[in-house]
Image (cartoon, rainbow, N blue to C red; front, side, top):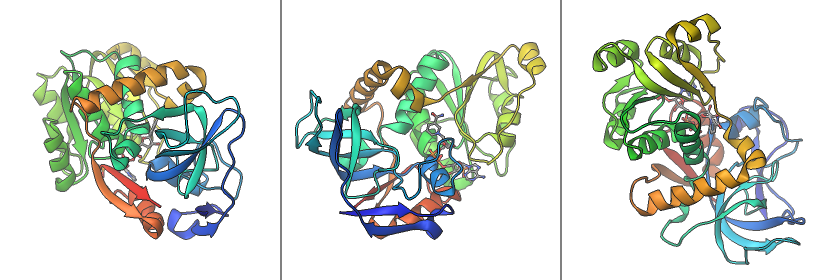
Length: 327
Ligand SMILES: NC(=O)c1ccc[n+]([C@@H]2O[C@H](COP(=O)([O-])OP(=O)(O)OC[C@H]3O[C@@H](n4cnc5c(N)ncnc54)[C@H](OP(=O)(O)O)[C@@H]3O)[C@@H](O)[C@H]2O)c1
């Protein structure tokens, strides 16, 4: 089979190359998956650079989510058969940017025929993270306001849709007029171009000075610092990621005086510590998708050798929604 490999760390376009590789064999409890589509995620970039919180051993194949068909079933696996349509989190180092990958059956989920491959490949990490963050961690209520940063991105667009599906009023920020328009089309209002407007002022004006109840922050850095200026009494700032490149701090005195919470979200760990919650969330996301309440924003379907350039564009703010790779 063919697989995209990283032999040394660096920017994706510099270090990713396609090579012949032996297909990974499923061990006990695993399934083999023929890759139909793989969603691109910011952590794939961080992994190529060696900046992700966990580092696979070199050489490795990146790709953190996959939609495809089961090609082999390891010993002890129940509930899956060859040919089943699934989405999954591939085994670390044997990622989804390949013809075939391997995953634990415990992190593999069935998908209905109504979901096409691109939608299925876009419906896992970003929506799981959004659902877990908004419902389980922030306890978002229908009468509340939610501010989503980088709203036109992968996790951002999912969070806008999930916030609206939960009945909240959703505000968003994005960099540049095209991305602002994307957030508007998703239903966020107001949407703030944080290159030219101060989102703190807009949020305060739109909430009679109160601020928003929940902030969903995949950006960090100055965006997190400024969010602390417009969080409401009893508000929750969800720490999702640091695409800005700077990990910010919140002084405990400020958290106390303004009476808000800084809430960490590490979705990946739920696969190990609370897999039942992930499975229930998957069922709920499929239900929402089939009911038309959420619809992954697939902006591009790329093929084969377009992968390194697409990851570079993702790293430098030149993508929106979800980019999906097909072998
Ligand atoms: N906590 C969790 O469990 C979890 C799970 C999944 C993902 N994440 C994190 O969520 C974040 C977003 O992931 P994603 O795959 O959905 O990416 P993405 O949002 O599609 O792309 C990143 C976006 O971040 C914004 N951004 C702001 N400053 C940036 C900078 N200096 N460089 C690059 N981008 C910048 C850009 O939007 P604008 O142009 O609009 O500013 C860019 O489009 C990542 O940090 C990822 O690690 C966390």
